[in-house]
Image (cartoon, rainbow, N blue to C red):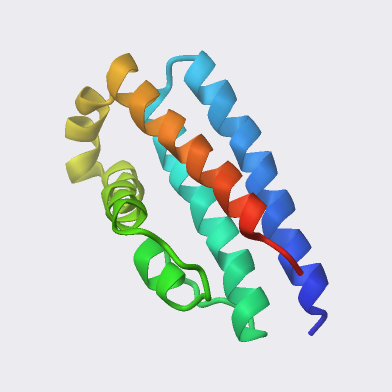
Length: 130
């Protein structure tokens, strides 16, 4: 396994998805913007997993579990944020929860969380050295 190629794959995929999330936000698709925002953070954490474990990451979406399997030093605030946005994956995917989440995703709600997703994304990229 070429570690650097796998890391590059996850980081490029995350960058692509960040562009998608921005487009979704601009088009007022707020629930899907946050879903893709979760995916951006997931993919960056998978890059860290590859870097630190030297193996392919598990096919999971739980940001906390991914982060726990890296050498990242996350603050309690960062861990709480990851726990909060974990719900964006589940609530958008499953129809019984989706409509309620859709109603929750006002412009203000989405701006607040998407801004923090972008901040976290930039911070994670600054931590990535390989």
